[in-house]
Image 1 (tube, rainbow, N blue to C red):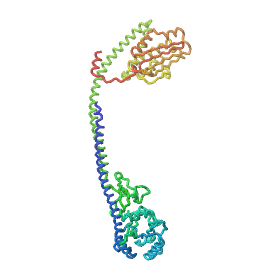
Image 2: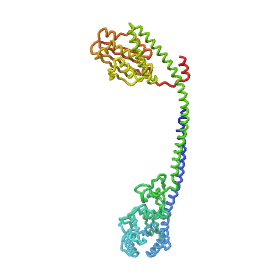
Image 3: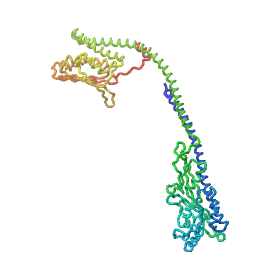
Image 4: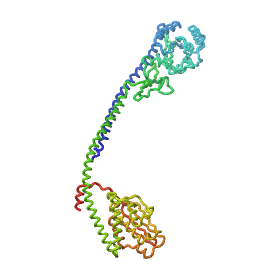
Length: 563
């Protein structure tokens, strides 16, 4: 089965999800751009409202200056009051604190007296120009309507004495046009309700001499100006922040109440500037908390979710089809395998029987050569057959796939030493031996245990047998199974017994050597001494470990039958 076929459901899911998400992203982008354009148009309308309001106020100042120019002189207080009263009846007056006139005079006692007399004549108040100043010129307020407590408190104030106002007055005088001041606190403001404000000045010159007589001006409260422009019906759902100049904290002049909206898909921001009689304001316009996008982005989310569900459904369907095909193929293979396995088992049984007969014949011949009498032969031959039978019994339990080393060792030793065997002295990792190794180690354990019982430490009740095994790996070499057989007696063996224990020429020794060296590719060594013997068996681990056999092919079956 190819990798592409196995990955087909995942590929279907990925492709459909990718297409769906790209479509949802395109929908999101299109809707977002439409919403941004819509909000930008709304922001433009709000800026235009503010510009219109400022332009209307500037028209009020120009209209007042036109009154002065038409009369050719500064009007009387009554004429000024009537004119401003008529202007005040219109909505255009909303946001401006009033309209006034400030005389442009030289600083000195004579001009101070003249200003005080004019204030007394116009409003009936006794007040000299204020505050004290070191400037050469003064611009004290002599006319200011409508007549409110705030405006009356400002009469006589010398605006030329304050740097911000003076800068705008000088600019208007030099450029001979309307100029606005930077943000400041109006003199009309009370301590309990201060607001940022600004003033716009229009110079008025004598008709004949062109000498500056003063300035028609208007004071504005910034908050009132913005709210009168932005809260017109319909109220726009926007949040406005304004700075006088660059957008810095120190230049902040206005900010809408509440916080900007944080709705997903409505994080629009429009930055712009407007010119206010030569003064630049920077505006940041963002959606307010009540803003709702004209086109909801829900459809984009629904499109993304639908693509995920569709991708999951198609991937599940694809996987289900694959499973149906795989189940059908598995049934076919299982049927074929069962037939093949049955044939194989028959051939395997024939093969094992022939091998077993060959091995029994070999053991009988070797045992006969080393036996001195028929009883001796019978006893040795029966014991070795029992060892082989024990190995075969273990192998049969796992269908000849393998046998546990410790179980095999314990079984062989119990046949020799009985149930009193102390299995605590049998230590090592769990290792499953293959068929060849199980038979080889079964014979080896039988021979070593028989020798111990005849000539070694097992002859004494106090004798101790310890068997341990481990896996070792030398640098750059494959792993090896190392098994140590150690016998100990509390008393020394007789000289003739020690000689028999260490003898290397008997059939048992040759059988052990042949089994380990020829069948398993390993080695066996012994180290006898007066209190017992140490035997070390070393075999390649790959030669003894059990592995499951793959299904036998038809070709392998024919080869097995031929054997």
